[in-house]
Image (cartoon, rainbow, N blue to C red; front, top):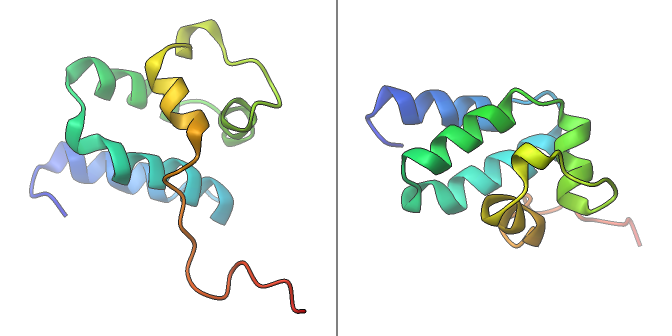
Length: 95
């Protein structure tokens, strides 16, 4: 983990949302993309962290239209969902 307190704070907030699904989605997004972000992207992400998990997940999954303040390339990247990985066994159907 980065030594920068700001990045550590964002990492923590992204990975401790309250549900495993939100932690995987929002935390995974941060882990995959944050290294390439500049000030504008970090500002967007901080604003996103203030939103309710149910709204963020609905926007990412495409079941609800994103708030206009969050539309754009960052939301497009979030909606790809190609950054989520769950621990082994978590995807088990029991079959």
